[in-house]
View 1 (spheres, helix red, strand yellow):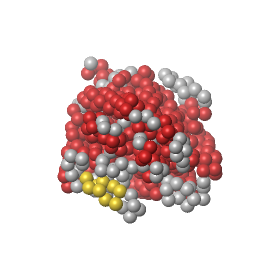
View 2: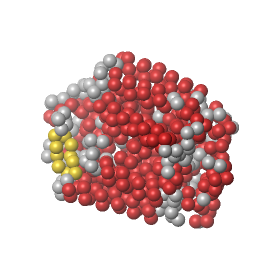
View 3: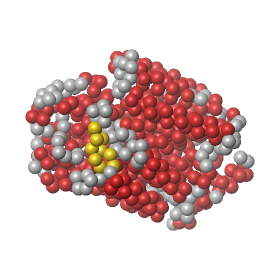
View 4: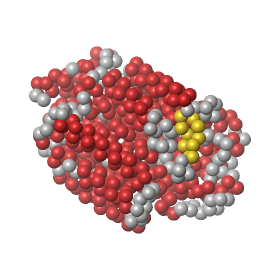
Length: 556
């Protein structure tokens, strides 16, 4: 592509979004995405895996996610572009890196909206037959959509599209109201549980860590804890649509994790204290509630708090629905970002007069509907999304490390202290979470990644995208992705979590993952693009930001 064509593309208003999201709107986009369906089952699932030590799991999970998020806080203020999680690797490592990250990110994001719809309909089954219960071959149970449930699921996805089509300003207004509701409900549950019943013996009667540290780490990856934190990314994905990125992006990314981590830890404490000691006679792993669709609502009913149970059933529809709305928005922005990087069809980058990437939005809607067919239940896809989303975050710390060497004089409105320490710990945290998720889930993820590489090969054979040249795709700068993804797959297969071979155990796995993460970090650091290439990418982003600012001024 010639430089003249590139400039024309960058200055075409049909390629740009609008900056209609303010400080609270961006913070609440992250908070609203974090507080989805995860908190409604996370307290029970984490207790079953780790007992009272689930409190540690929630806190440690929050710290690990924050270590990852901090890299994005610096990057997001340097380059406030929509779809930043995909576009940052493009700046530092080139097209192959951004394609790979974009593919993984898109897989993860496009699955969330339909899953949240399924979660809402599962809880709503208390009132109508939206789902039906099935027992799988491994003994686990799932709630699959019925014909009525599928009809309502399609309608809910269509509503998400309509709200997004109206424009990002209206999206922010709708989301702000829903987030206030969700924060109010969680706070109410914590306070009421603490006041109604709090038995301190529940924290020690079966031992504080009945499953040891293995249980604590298992809970982080598989009990909904990581899944419950993943929405912090929205402060990055929508950075190009906020009016003051320097102030708003760090607030949204860091503030959302700290706020929700505090709430989740308090909720876990309140949940454990409110349990009847008789329910623990079989051990924490056997803790369950019968004849009810949600553990928090079940516990509220057992405590005689019928009114709170009703509110929880309402929230079990509102919270997942709001998160689904946010992810329809973000998935369309990921497609938009990939098109802006020129490793996806250009049509995905076109926006309407309202600043909406309409083609990307429709693609997200269609693929979301298709996912209802092979994955008709929430339980069948949640682990896959968790591992894929964390994996998509993993490139951020390495982008930050590379850019500090490539563009040391670039203005950094928010600068992360500590040199390489926090970025490396962010990568290490990401790799550990993927490892703890287990092979039964991860093998599906790595097959999906392999499919992405196959599609890339087909695109190259057909002469699409950036063509065949090494310079166009920056193979050398992005080649560290291959040993990174392949190594994680091998470690997961050798591990003792969920289907692994059991070669690696608690005492050996963590140091091995540490050394592996360090090797990948160093490899990526030394394979980064030359500063001149990075400067070209930055100049492109500056032209885009200038057009978006001009549009904002005209709109105001």
